Image (cartoon, rainbow, N blue to C red; front, side, top):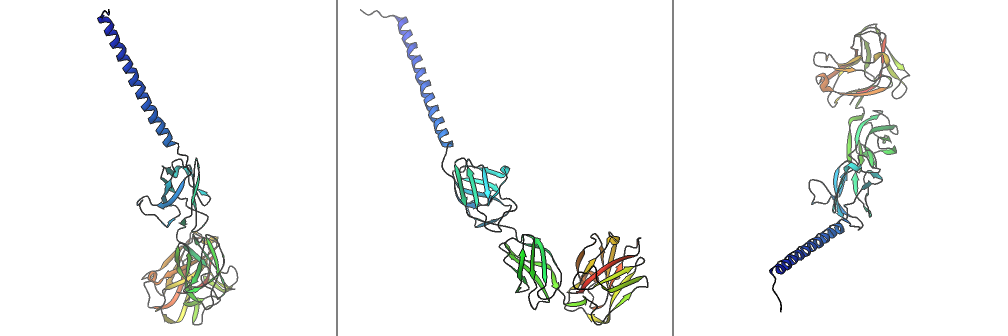
Amino acid sequence: MVIFNPKMLKHMKRIQLFSGQILLAVLLLTVLFQATSCKKEKQADTSLPELTGVTTLIDRSIALDAVNYGDWIILRGKHLATTYKVDFNSVLAADSLIYADDSTVTVKIPPVLPDPANNPITVTTKYGTATLNFRILQPPPTILGFDPMAGASGDVVTITGYNFGGVTNVKFGSTEATIISSTKEEIKVNVPAGITTAYIYVTTPSGTVRADYLFGFKYEVFTEALTTGWTYAPSSVNVTYLATNTSPVKRGVNSLRVNFATAWGYLQLKKTAAMSTTGYSGVKFSLYAPASFLNKKLRIYLNNSSASGAYTITITKINEWQQFELPFINFGNPANLNYIAFNEFSGTATFPREIYLDDIGLY
């Protein structure tokens, strides 16, 4: 015979409730463990990285064919989350400029790369590397100047500037010049046959640029000597000159030395009969100033241009030749040319003081 005991029933219910709680806890731990295991499994992607293309940060849907040095770009692909190094043709991107997830790497291209155009991109993750052959272009070329500013066929002209890497050609007008040597900042060429005056063009894989100044003269005033029909006219006996000076010389054998014994003196190069300026844009010349002219002023006049304008040069470079190309607008756009004057314009001690001039003419 079974005797029902209420206390025993209550105890059994407590056991069942406790067992249920244990079962629920076990189930929760199992789910949590499985979720954690899945998460860890997802993070531990050990696949080799893949690169499929490049986009900009603005439009991520259009793949690019080429970008420029220094650009921000997005590398697209797979298995990229652990990227810790991006190499642009042996030049590493700065660590602080790399951001990666599974399918993209956002990175800034270094400002200078070895090749003017073809610079493969290599990413390195914890599990391998991937390389994408890609065109990363240097900026378009920039011409700062060329020397000498005039010359005969076959003479060597040195062009200075930036981004000359991979130069494909140099032209004087439409005539191609022979390239003797080139670096990223300097090109040496021979003046093509038959060229007396022309603009210089430099072409690289990134584009073509034209020099601001014209090579050569449309009209020569002084090279080795004054052109026929021109004379020297000093302002007084306190201004002397030597037209056969042999050192320093910009080009050729002779330069023109002008000595100022007192302030405000000038030397005119005077045209016997005034000439028309039609077809010309301005005057150009080379100037050499010794230390005595440092921070002093030299003023250039055409005709009596003091009433309509003149050009004042403050000498900041000494013991080297400088080239100047001055448009006629600086002198009131004269219709005719009577003289070119070089005027000591600082009026300060110490005297005597001299300058040297060479390659004077019109362009």
